[in-house]
Image 1 (cartoon, rainbow, N blue to C red):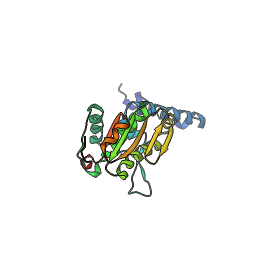
Image 2 (cartoon, rainbow, N blue to C red; image 1 turned 90 degrees about the vertical axis):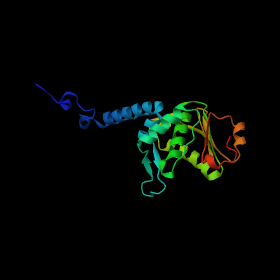
Image 3 (cartoon, one colour; image 1 turned 180 degrees about the vertical axis):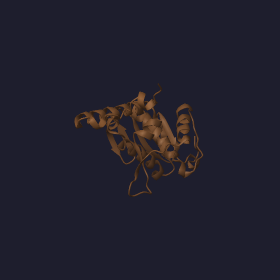
Image 4 (tube, helix red, strand yellow; image 1 turned 60 degrees about the vertical axis):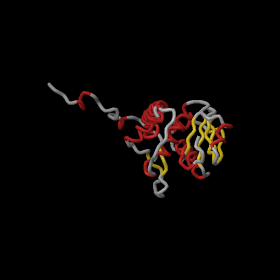
Length: 195
């Protein structure tokens, strides 16, 4: 006699309707914790399953899941494995969000990681720090419990694990006094003497 996979392997959701409210809440908390643990290991999983971006064009529902586009996953792989990356991109690719998300994940999961977001003007540099803050604020609860803010300003964020990010404007020489782990030059083509 042959049986289908559905008969052999019950769904993990089967029987949830029979659980008491406290048991259901416990089951949901366990599921969130399992997601959080996977998110600690994978920037892709965290970005696509455990946090949200903000869509500035949509006033009704501005917070949305990070899109699961193949090029974004590939971009994360390149950033993770290459020491220096320059990206030529269009505005619709979410490259700034992706790079900021990757840098944020490093900050959140590796103590004492310093990130500089530098641009020729303050708005662009601060925008990347705002992306990090948004991704932290929109993360699932078990991650927000782990990733606590120690200090915050409009252009700066420091976590309790001593990781930080800051927006710097103008001359690349300013980077030397900060001793960062990661440097992101937003709109690098416009920074004079990009070194």
